[in-house]
Image 1: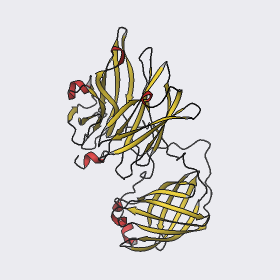
Image 2: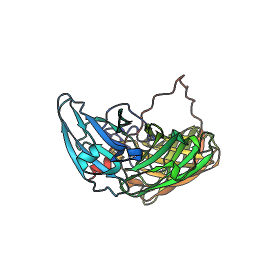
Image 3: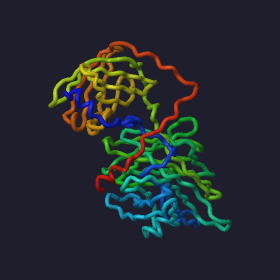
Length: 400
């Protein structure tokens, strides 16, 4: 077991890692962005769609270098070409028809932007076509977050009928092939059809909803990832388009960070104690403080004998089965992650198994018993403002 003296050496807490990725953060600067829909290509009714990109250097005292890669649709973009652009202090990079002029491509895909030295920046784009009365199109904000494996998301506001059409797309920034399922529903919640995006590494695809579903008027998309793994990252979007004017809007997904599709059968909030058995390591007596809000379950794991804060957990309970991820609490153990499931046998007993990395790489099992309740928390009159986990561009940093 890890001894208490190592806890005294910790130099930082890894706050926020258990928070699920949230949609449309837009709350500050970051060092990695995705423009999920980018292209330079002819469209319907005589249109030609292109993308103009703006990248801002917020530093008034130094220049930064932003690397931009074009992720072409239905292509393994692991070794996609990229270009480096140096932006003067306080300056802005403006690239007209960026896909066509900078990458020489007639086609569609996505743009990935990042800085190798961790400098912060921000970006926006506009996809548009020309008409006799001028240009028209849609704005696309730089997206600085992703959805993880087993993640679910929603996009309201689509429409498929005689007056409007809708395209939907998914983008993977994972180093392995993944599958993302899109299910569409009408305004009354009736299922209308589905499409599975089978995405190559760092790839994307866009399809018309009419290609797999009938006309149903206003509705929504429910997204889910069918691939598991701790390196899975993806985003999704929808673009409803007016059939008369050709004008469209861009809609980001909204991540289901509250696991609304799960049906909780218990309220497990309280303090639980028991044994954590790790293959190849041994057994440890642990104390787990659980908070459950509808289906969402969070928890903090402590070594019972030393009080050492081992990790914290994030997951959900669905009809007596808890699915969870565990993350280390201190920097020294940043690679000690785990994931697994638990079965709730009663209001006082649960057991489960897990897999993991580094310290938990051998996997293991646990059994817990309910000990006592936690003091209830006082709810504020307004929900706390949350900040979601952002993509860190780690795949690039590891030499992609």
